[in-house]
Length: 151
Image 1: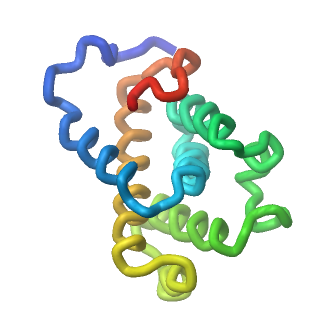
Image 2: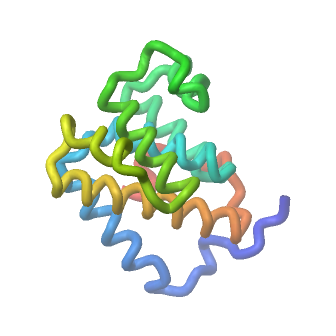
């Protein structure tokens, strides 16, 4: 794989808006470990190698287990994801695969999140989908990411 556009050569300001969104989400009440799990799952669906490398390393750093990360594609069939995690994963998959979530999936979030948190979660799902598409389009090479590199 040959990288199409190197991150180091990107124009100043190109990602300022997305980076501001990342800072906003970091300050939200959403659990960082849960968001990272969601980001890893969306990156699996989208096949983004760079993002998979990043979110795998971040998840492990936050205390996630290899077992859960390896079985994440089968989250509906394995017993070690919580109801809250399942609600987030179902919502993220629906938005990623269909750009919409049916009422059952959306209502599944309400026992765990208030309206503001659901809005922030929606933004987080849209954000990782955007990062996946950018990194896939640029063919960003995975493997060099270090935890906290973009903090």
